[in-house]
Each structure stands twice: as C-alpha cells, then as structure tokens.
Image (cartoon, rainbow, N blue to C red):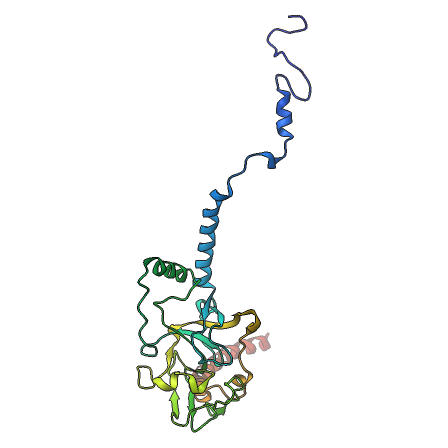
Amino acid sequence: MAGGVPGEPVGPVGPAGPGRDPDDDEDEGRPAHGRKQRSFWKELPLLIGIALVLALLIKTFLVQAFSIPSDSMNNTLLKGDRVLVDKLTPWFGSTPTRGEVVVFHDPGGWLPENPSPSSNVVVRGLQKGLSFIGLMPSADEKDLIKRVIGVGGDTVSCKGTGPVMVNGKALDEPYIFPGNTACSPEVPFTVHVPKGRIWVMGDHRQDSLDSRFHTTLPGGGTVPNSDVVGRAVVVAWPVTRWDVLSIPGTFSQPGINAAAGTAVPAAAGLAGALPLVMWRRRRLLSKAGPVQESAEDC
C-alpha cells in the first residue's frame, strides 16, 4: 500500500474530490438539450385541453363570436359577418345603452322553431362540442342582433316614414340601409319602454322583424335586459369588413334622456330632504349659541 493511508479512499485528489469519477464532470458539462425530452405527441393532448378550457372561459366570461344570419342589419352588418360580443361588462352591472348593437336571446315568439338536428351522430356531436366552447353557433340557441333604440323609461314613437322619436327628440340615423325610411308607414307605433327592458330595431328597416312587429307579444315588443347576451363591439370577419361598432352621435344629443322620469324622483327627494336639513341646521345653531356666549364672558 505504498503511498496510501489506511482508512482513506484511493483515487485522484483534486477539484473532482476524493473518489469521484471524472466522467461525472463530463456529464455535467453536457448541454441540457442533449437529454431526452418528453415526446411532443405526449404533450399535445395537454396543450389541446388547456386551449379548450381557455376557449370555454373566454366564451363564458369575456367575448364570444357570433355569425350574422340575415340581412336585417344591412349595411352595418352583412349576412355571414362575424362579430365579437362583449360579455364581460354585464357581469359588472352594465346595462344596454341607446345606439348599441346587441345580441339577445329570443324573448319568445320572435323566431321560428329550430330546424331538426342532423341525423348524423358524428356531425351532431361535433356541432355540440364546438358550440359549447364558442367556436360554432349552437343549433339550440335562438339569438338575434339589433340596435338599441330605447331603454327603460324612454318613450319611442314613429309615424309615417319617420324620423324615429326618442323622448321627443328626432334621431338622425345615417346607419339606416340606403333607400330605407326610418319607419314603415303601415306600422306606426308609440311605446313607453318599461324599466329593465329595451326597444330594438334593425338598420335595414324594411327587412327587419324587430320590436315593431311583436307588440302583441308579452312585453309589447320590448326585450328584457336579462335576455341580452352582450354588446357587439367589432366586426372581426372577413378581414376586409373589419370595423368597430361605435355608438352614433345622435344618441348623445341634449335632452334625449327621459327628463320626466328623472326630474320627478329628484324633486320628490329634494322636497323630502329640505325639512330634515332645516331641522338639523336649527339644532346646530341652538348648540352653538351658548358656546359663543361663554367664550365672550371669558
């Protein structure tokens, strides 16, 4: 055992440490990409699952794509256009506003019965799956898209060919389909929109079965806010039609808000608060009097 010491390991001594295999240093120096990676095909199902969950969450809480099924909103929206609908703001208490283009569920009796589903089990299953995550319109849902003309508390009316009047103010509607009139002479109307509901009309006024044609149904042609899916904010497809669906300026003209509906409660509130304010003021003055006198005596 020349050169060796009993009880100590035999081997090179240095940076590698006693008893350490030099090949270990070579392994440490190998690049990470040299190690065996997980197969792409094993990761693919996980990636697809994450994508589907994200798509479902986005469709449920953020935005959803809808396809335009008819010509009732020409030329603002054409048949086959796809719009993105904001579903987030209603979660925070936002309600429909005049001038918005909204998607809403059929309040009842506006649309015909849905066509029978496909007899092909695979096609039917595929359609249900894609519609569930928002990549395809559902065959079971009956949705419409129109422009909000009046909200709860408004009085909306139209006679002859127009214009449409909202709370006594005439609307300037450049978005109406060229050649159309604001109203149809055979369907005059005057409606007081109940609270929590909206009055809607299509931009293609002579080719839109909107609120005007459902006044005999429950709600008198109005749509409950709870049936509104959300506001259409962007034309997303085709790319040549990309556009932002903003609110026309005519809906912000002075005096269009229902003055009578807001003035009466405000006046009643002021009348009720005035005696309380006067009583509190007199009480404060009566307390302040003796304090001032004692200060002067000092």
